[in-house]
Image (tube, rainbow, N blue to C red; front, side):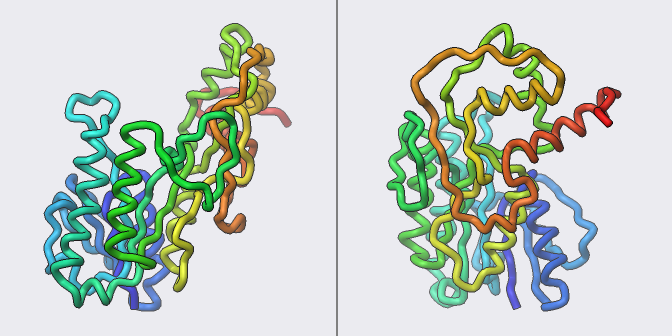
Length: 294
């Protein structure tokens, strides 16, 4: 029987806890969740700890076999999170778990998997390069450097029990920013060769659940859909679907990066940006009382 500890109960962590609870109920699996703010669950067999993950004790983690670390840095001022905010969240949580493992060897040996949700930002490439799981992670930004530090802490402490999941840009059914951009793109223009990568939030939840159920997961997963695309391609698709004028192309050198996914394609409901944004646009039209074709 597995005992899952899910640290962080936001848009990804809470659905993951629920999915694992539903999947494992017949096997007698248990799920414990940790967050600083209060959360409630319909599932009776989810145990909630309202506390800072940096203060978890040996009693809190006793019996835990699988950990998922899904935290979000927040700036005290509400501004964009800084490297210090990343250190106070990602790195601090990973260092605390490492210290717990070093102090309680029996629990360390009992653990089967420590999954950390990082980011493809740890790859500093920005000239349109292809990236796969064999590409060395050389971060270029201060925040990405902290993420890489946190990864290294877990890999050093937990060895092959550490699983690093690096998602690309996470979007959801309420991600309407690109719809707004597409409406203006014929006027302001769009770079011709800026590469982007994405994964729907619900697909990421499924990916994480599937990885946690694997007896021998890979050490690194690049969680992204199957089609890197330029921002021009994505906005052109949205503009056509929304009956907006085509975007104006601004000729540029390649930028961004192209992430080659190594997850099972069967885990994805939204295999590419087209499938994902069709769903986003359908919800947008419904909420705005817009007519749809057909």
